Image (cartoon, rainbow, N blue to C red; front, side):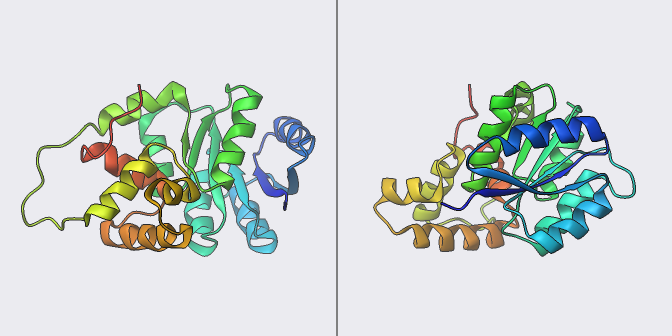
Length: 216
């Protein structure tokens, strides 16, 4: 199995190097590059095309949200995780809109960070439990949609429901007895139809529309 290739960007050198040491100690992970600001992170992402870009928000030259936006636009196969001290909901929403698949607080346990890296590498979405409830409360089910709103086929609704439960593409395929490639293709169509950037936005959409319950 290929290792998870990680780009780590944070302007606090000691913190960045400490996280890098922990990541490098994992048999399935390797840090391919480190950056001290967002602009350098973007350049290194273009060069190394990592599996995961782990970004701080508050960095000089280009912040983590803008770096996430550009990385996900240019390198859709790279999963972006925001690692920050900020709990503010607006930062979370901006990061998700920018294409981030994960949002984790720096106070999180290192085991949680490692689990998040592996989850996003599998194509899943991760929001720190300390803020997930608040974020999803903002997205509680809305009133019934206008009849003019485009309706998803039943199969796409099933896929969205399972995605919102945190299942990977392969797990969704196994549950619905279809090919993993079919799940990938249907999700691409769903994202395009609903103007969603990634799995995180899709999961939040499912909760907002009442297709899936928020986590406890």
